Length: 256
Image (cartoon, rainbow, N blue to C red; front, side, top):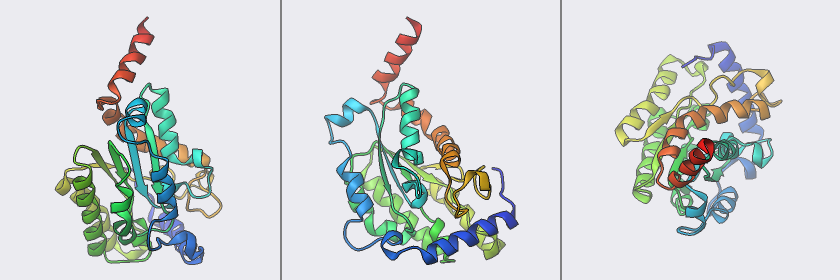
């Protein structure tokens, strides 16, 4: 994995801390009850059996503003870009984007059971970055993410689950950043889920690939993020029983 320089990543994360501190509470924190973003995501998800089987695998993305596509049009967020990539590859899928801006891993625990009401053949979990930005204990984040993974496996026993690697700012010290980094791989192994490389690989710290806040990817950067995630998901989507007829049809068309 390419490592972002300490100075560059510190600069990026300083901007992220400012964004977290200054953002409106209504947009930045998970409130009690059903989060608005989740209500929309679950409401637009296909119903089991009918639309889901016609469309192909349903991929549920659970995450923060990085998943929600903060500052971008809905179809520019990386989950929707992945849906477009899958269509182009002859693997029709249905994406459910359940990203919530400003959410910590504790916030994700609070809403995970409700989010998991949505149908899902594949679940992608992106959480923990806001814990690091607040300097919250790694042990607490680890416990929260473990809970999220356990509940996801219990609710979706047949789904393929992916955990997205996130990184902590180096100004928190080498001990913290190392423990934070290692946490993801350890949890992936312990819980038997797949690990996706660092979400912002090749994007973090590059002003040409980020919005004015220096934090969230712009449309160009988001395409790089989508490619990182797509590379991890594609083999699973191609192997999905729901995708098999579409893939076979695409191959038949290509050879006829």
